Image (spheres, rainbow, N blue to C red):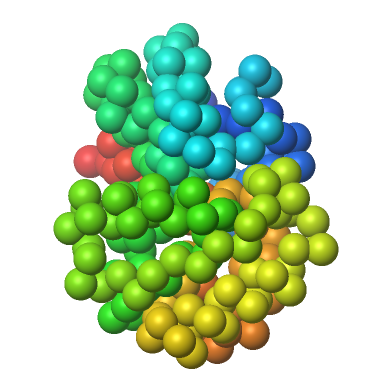
Length: 226
């Protein structure tokens, strides 16, 4: 007998728009707490022909149409674009036919507003910082933005242990020098380091894939609610 509120045969598709298997695996593992018994399935995939890392605006732009085609061809109930540039987010929403499409940057920043007064972003590179400043301005969140600090890495490096010290160093600068009291990880591959960075920084640290998938999960569950 199906339990009240249980949802079966529904699915959320999380798409990593780069081709890094390490990043895709890190995302998949971070989402385990959201895989509810009897709830929507959460599938994670990548774009095999996508760039190894999305480090520039050109990289982000290059995946817009492949993402749109992937979403249009899939029967999932909701989608998450698992790249902090939120590439093709509005195009994806157009082709999704009313199904929810969440961008991890958008949801990571929105969640940060509930946990602190000033958010800081741990960025992949200086190029990422420029895109983040633009995104913050477009979202109208400039007054709450402490800044971004880059670790100068590619996405495929972020899931490994070697980068953790750089993430922690960036986090501490955001808190001590920039006045951030909540931090957002600026790449999906950074997911395995959230707890360690939070302990070192002494303030909440948001893993944005989890937040975007949690939002998608709520959207799918509420769609079937009375």
